[in-house]
Length: 416
Image (cartoon, rainbow, N blue to C red; front, side, top):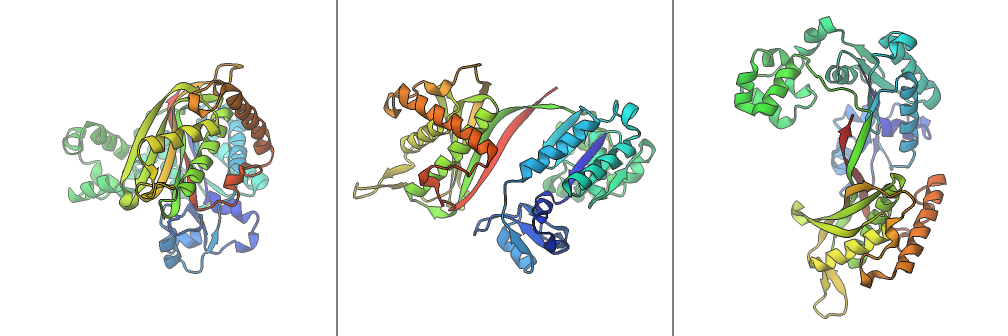
């Protein structure tokens, strides 16, 4: 089993266009008072900067760091990396934009030893894409992942079967893959700081303190046990996006623009996947991180961004989030919003040759002809966006709109 992980992926993709910044602290993030670090160079990490950290704090820790905005090339390089991996083995499980597991069991008959394959993959990625990566090889996913983490940056680490405990035992328990801060703290309270100490306790004791699932998981980790196979297909259960406003807002125009941007992206992703949504979930967050969600079942499945936008805005009004101001002359949010999100759920494969978005969902939302026009327009725009970029053509209402940051997300389950 091999685990391949691109090193500071977002940073190194940006460095392809800014080679003069090599060896300097770099942070990739959207600028804004609520932005978080998407990626940091190892020079910035030396100052304590890490992914997910508020950008404001990262700037204090590494004041000399160059802040680079996110661009749109990451998908291209991610796909190129996965193609290189699939040249070596068909059993590739992509777990994120910049990492994957590769089952090399059958590949060694043609490609040579696991080490030879890993070296060839890393050389191809460096030569063809000019990007560094790290790899770990061992007998299962867990150990391969831990080995690749230990080999960073730009390294290769092999953990053979007879050296598993030698590799794991000195490791702090908080470094174990899947052990979060809370679990590590609880283990420390019992005097368990290393894997060697964790291995002294049997499954019954661990299950008694951490519950059956977590206890058995810890017992297996301490012994390097992991029976999960590589899964080559992942079926999406939902897909969606969230937009965090630069400042808490009650402005309806800002809220509607954010929802429209989310909805159009969501529609493109649904159509690209050949899927329709049977339900939408609206997520909204007030100041103080008070968060709520509302699920909306649909009478007909949709894949149109404009339909999603209209349904979401109607839901916001029906829920009382958007209300008339005291003078009754204009609308405003009932409370200032920090975040708005839309998630498409109950995904199903779009019937061949049928565009579900052509049918009216609400008599007040326009007739079938209007919906058919939007369906044709959006499908035509898909080709332009694929050839150029998602920003090549946008509604006039979204031109120049950057009042915050939008984050795409998806939920998947595995299918063997």
